[in-house]
Image (tube, rainbow, N blue to C red; front, side, top):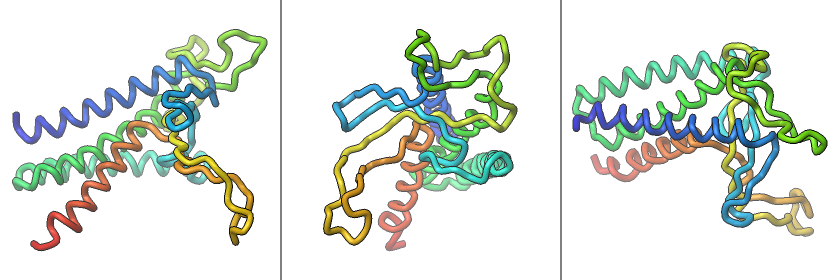
Length: 209
């Protein structure tokens, strides 16, 4: 199997797993619903965000347009660069790390670009209405938003440490402290792993070269 085939297979598999997980969550869980997987350490917690990875926000509707366009340009640039590196016979580990980042960025682009069109609104559950809050794929009444205005689906939550700041702490004394607080998805994970691999490769593997 050629390096090009390995990279694009990796990208395809990440996109597939990312989108299948998001669609399953979107069509089976209401907004804010939590399902414990490993006690209180690993929880499926459905939320959506309007902006960047791990739930960060970015400047409203125009910010979403700008972010989506930037992501599309970035994915196109990364794809070109990966093909260039393959021709240059660059190290496979570095190329695969870039493939992870590309796949993650593309996965969140799909949400932003299409989810507002192909899904109706996910809402919090109404106890009086069975099945309320769960979105439908390709609803008859159309989606909840327009092209590039969809929201990114997040679901993985790892509150490994859930405690309070000590009363003597100079900051946030007595307030809640949760680590790790952000809720994320497969695409976010792929980007993070790719960046970590590149940093590791830069500062350790290539340090003596």
